[in-house]
Image (cartoon, rainbow, N blue to C red; front, side, top):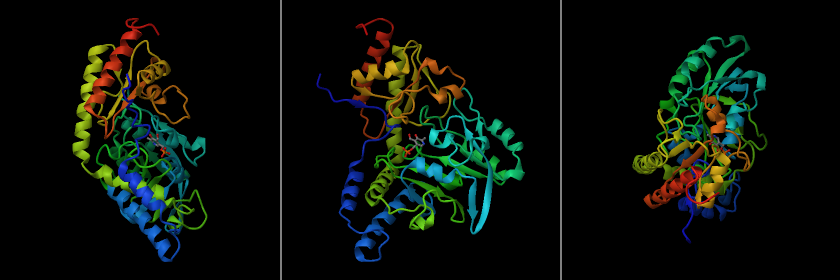
Length: 388
Ligand code: PLP
């Protein structure tokens, strides 16, 4: 009674960090336009450039190669286009290959027409099928333009980490481009654009404790860039027009800085809590299935199915008990749809999928209480405990 709620939906969004809030409040007091040359403008520019250094550092990229956007969805729409430039010369991308488990921001193919997008299948363990990608690329019609492959580094529903580097080797052998949605990975594992051999990374602020509505497209170099999506005043070196949202970017930068700090220690602690919760859940409900459990996963995610409990009913049951979790991804305005990720894994999406995702401030007490709530909900499903 009177207990505070337990928030275990960090893959949907993370609570705003104190450091991000402080940086945003400071930036809100800067009255200048970061594109003005006077002192006020330069002060605002400094805040934007500090954020750029902080976000670039999180993914080991150069500050010259980062375009700020209003979130990962916009960054995806910017990079997923057939029209690129290599310096001053146009470069055509003929076809986009996206994994079947991508977030809709990527899966829908951005500015490619639907006929130019192919899907890369996924195994039952939730890992993208690299052999299938190789076969697809072998039949790529080179006369249409170069291939582009988009595979996420970690899946938002299962947390399964994807073989991005192997995919990059395949697409690079064909002279094509590798785009990696690293939204769920940053802050939860080391992310290095060079080590991943990616040409572009997509990142978002609000999954790491920054504000919503800020993100970035990070590139490996400066020469090869997509046709701008938002044109206007030439901001972001002409790659994204519009006066920068200084406060949001300052918050994003602060969150990125924080995400780097204690990365290993923080995630080791979170993995310990996650593993303990999984053990408890399996003990309470041996018929529970953890999706993607056989594959390498993010340290914070449990995507599970409980026979006899539909996603929607389950989500409401946990919510009523005081615990926020999610039925797969949370990106369609409150709708609980069927998981395209489960379908792609060859599983029955009707079986239901519920996602628990932990974060930096999740405590052992939260996990104990979550375990007790799980036992209640799982027990009730079998007709024990109180009636629904
Ligand atoms: N990519 C992944 C894997 C996500 O989980 C999300 C958000 O849920 C996005 C992209 C979209 O990010 P944003 O909300 O910044 O547009």
